[in-house]
Image 1 (cartoon, rainbow over the protein chains, first blue to last red):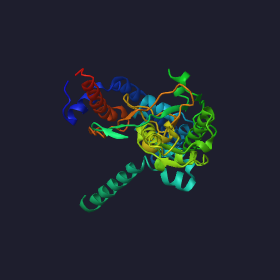
Image 2 (tube, rainbow over the protein chains, first blue to last red):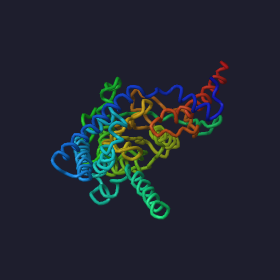
Image 3 (tube, helix red, strand yellow):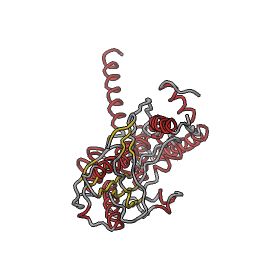
Image 4 (tube, rainbow over the protein chains, first blue to last red):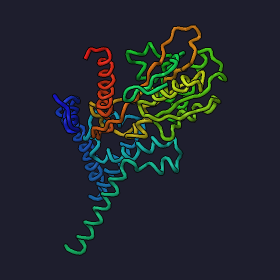
Length: 146
Length: 230
């Protein structure tokens, strides 16, 4: 293979780099993600059984899963789950909690104000900025045009 | 001392690599090179509160043990060339602040160590110094923290990702070999920056590969031409 241009080189790199085991990753992501959602559903049904209304039940599910995920992150367990399950644990709300707690732990050594406070949203920040911006735009459109 | 060819410096006198020392982290000590390292750490923190402090301690202890091993007095060392991966080279500047040796901070990312040896040998060859320390350090955790994601983040590393070394290497370059058997530096050929447009921050080897290939291709071509093999 002759490498003359940058593109040739990048193609060569792509060819030589080991690929991620996509099937295995998908399978693990599927069952771990499904398990997390099932746990959420069990909590939801339990709350409903206890007589909470629909909105409260959803809120309790979110809070519980965030709490569990933050706790597991602190115990250095969640990153092992994430390594195994990938998107399965990253896409549900557990991944969001992990993305805020992990910088908080990482930057604790730089102090509580500039470290934890300042760096806590380095990973989740873009999601918040564009998530909230998008919802504001959709809200404006909905108010005036729908 | 003069420039020969396209990018090579021929040194007048060849400095000796008088003494070497190395300290590595837990992952490196499980590898096949473990028996060659002077000290293997079991803990990434090494009793410190942050990874940056641990890295500082690694380079500090490494340089201390290097000087102790060499048998040269601290006051006989003229200059120190050192650097690391962190902003403002904090590990080496904080780690070596107590050595009381004039300090040159060097940054060349993965080439820092060789870069410092190049500069150090020029100093010795031009009689600006008799003994020079060249050192570098890196720490997997502090590098991940600065350049990539927090370690606690539950993401998957791609198969092609490389691992930043936790550890430090240091040498003493000297104009005399003190009757010891040691290697010498005769020529210096610095490489060029070659950017082939690799954007993956995890796949470092592909970034270096192109530059490395061009370097060896140019260098060896000249040697072979000289030896009339080509």
